[in-house]
Image 1 (tube, helix red, strand yellow):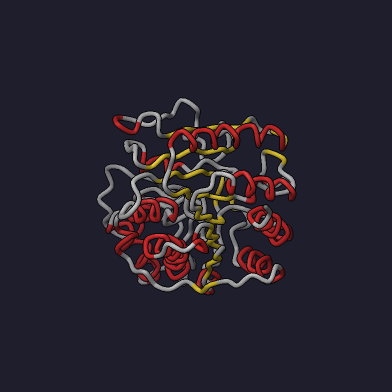
Image 2 (image 1 turned 60 degrees about the vertical axis):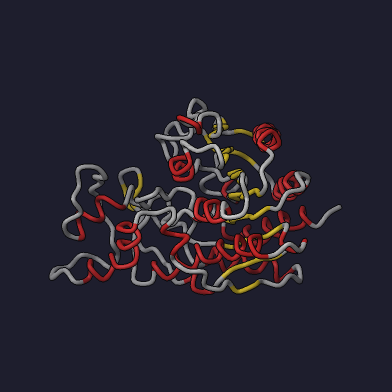
Length: 343
């Protein structure tokens, strides 16, 4: 097992979060990574500092103009000769028929909702979150030893809501999609299993017409719950990708037994697909006391989840994404890691 992270991911510190008609306290904060890093330390496991892989794998998934906005949008925002606030944040969302002339138009085009503001150091964290995930992919591309069969990436900000050219849901670059595409240099079939509380509509959108990347997601029903417009069971993919997008929306209030019922169905899909590599989008926001939870997974449940994934006997890259009950992140990650260490 190898675990990756990078200190620069702590620099992104959102001040604003506009959701459902009001400003709310941001939940995706640096303290999350601080707590996650305690878990491997207390278990006596080393954390590898991610090395820079570069921008090319990011641009293989995301549009150049969008990445340019993420990188330079803050400076352009601050250059306006009036008080704009300390973060790039908009209440105008117009992705289509928008020429992107001026930073306000760019924000309207490239920010899909009010939960992905861009501050002074946001790009640095966004970039190193992607680099952290890419380190695990590079290990599989360049090495054959067994220590790379299970890799865990402590990444923030998260990625699975990021579209090809839009940020949202606390996400900016789609780490799962970036590494899945990067892995295709060597491996024929990549499976992404997403067990975050929310549906990863960004991953779905990016691979919706492809059959080389299976996306299967267990998440809370999107009816009146983020991302609201995607994640339904009837969304199966299109063209040659039809059948390679599989959603398991859980009724709100699902208990742990119900959660694993859907996880088991998702795993059966993976077995039929027979992937070369599995990418797991792990969300601790399914934990019973998480402020985003619409189901009731216990700490011990995360150990069970890891055991089920390990039993597939495939190389696995875990991206730790959602999870906002900060005081339980350390304990829950320790439980998850322990599931991989049991025989």
